[in-house]
Figure 1: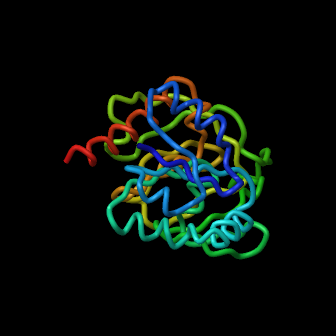
Figure 2 (figure 1 turned 90 degrees about the horizontal axis):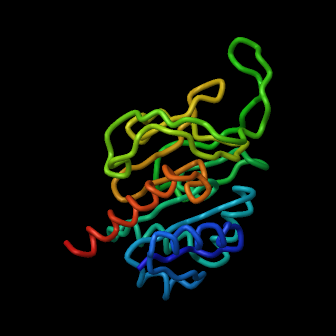
Length: 211
């Protein structure tokens, strides 16, 4: 059973439809007493980091998520949900994140190292480049996925980075440590590869339940 966290800033429709296509059993809730019953969680997100953290704290979901992970639960963050997994963000001024993974979220500056101007946000299809082996990549070929974001992860801990994409610099695209996983792109909108990655996440959760 997958619990999709509803804090008013997630694309719940597209995530729900993807889970239905994969035959997953899921529910959507903003209530920690219900979400704690889930075998694995998905934290979607669209919008501002600061607003998202304010909303999570209002619902007391920040402390719930921290405890859920500490107790060994699986968590998948998608797009803004991935960024929230980290320590801080500069979006709309400084904001603390969930601090489940090491790193901060900074803005694309729109000028590359060789002074080439580029568009912000990073929007459209871009190819993943795998940086290390991980169960989330099981039977996945490197292929294109769909991004929409103006802010990206900056981290000194490269062991957290599972896959990157190149957008005038190397951009972390899949991250993870232990049972915490994040995808900067939208897997639910990323054709066959995106659906395979979501299926792999569901299988990881299923393996935990069967263990």
